[in-house]
Image (tube, rainbow, N blue to C red; front, top):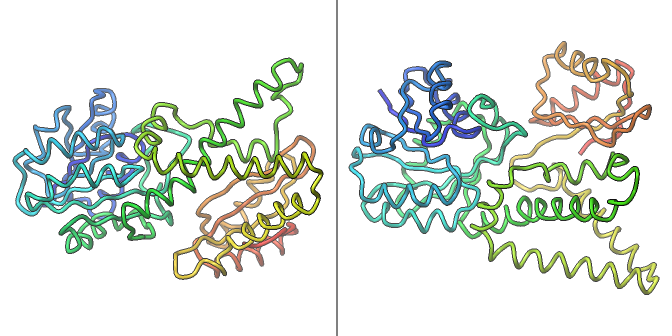
Length: 365
């Protein structure tokens, strides 16, 4: 029997627990968390087989240890594990949002001969906690792997354990990981938060204020609703990379400001032209050998049951939607529904089904 210890039963940890059990119900999953309520719920709903508040009570049994807390907690856990009694052949991994700090903290453990694989599933939800977890949370999401000093042979073992997640594995270096997530995730979170705060200040004396916010503003600031405590820890662990990326973004804003001050129409046009060309290249035809998502955009009327009608048509055709996102929504005006599929064939079939149902397809990416 394989025993898996998961420390941290929040959204990610509890979802991994569910996926592990789904892949092989015989796997014995032990949940560790400081919150008694989370442990009780996880045990009662059979998310895990066994629960502990103290990590030291169960790590010696583990064939796999998954560290699913914040990055600073993961670092402390790795430091402790380097001195703990562990089962021969145990594989240790994490799900932290930055990797250089984690991989550095894992060095003493690796020097003992314990394989460590840095991990980061690029998936989440607006919900949090053990009750929000689900086995399909990671389906078709990218899952970064950063094998440690001697961990490469252990990678297939970890992938088999997590096979039910249905993720798209991507192996990178710690530096590549932190640069990528800094630019594509951390920087956008800072930008969104700053834009919301600045807008709140700018419209503080307006009787309408943010009540007018819709469409584009809501779309680009959605991630500003993220958990402040979690994001403070994430940004702190990637501060040097993010500082440089923020400076580049500030420079780009200043260039736009100068173009506006000088009424430089060519400069303003070039700003949007370059952005359009780059954004349009995000479609699957331009992504090389990386696994892709396949998006479909359609008009959706502002009326009761409109989204249900779309999903009903897809369900009848046995088409699975990886993600669904409603864009540019205003009362009494058509919105845009973004549907994401895991392969081109499913998207093409969806185009046929939805067009036959009288729905208007805007574009495919």
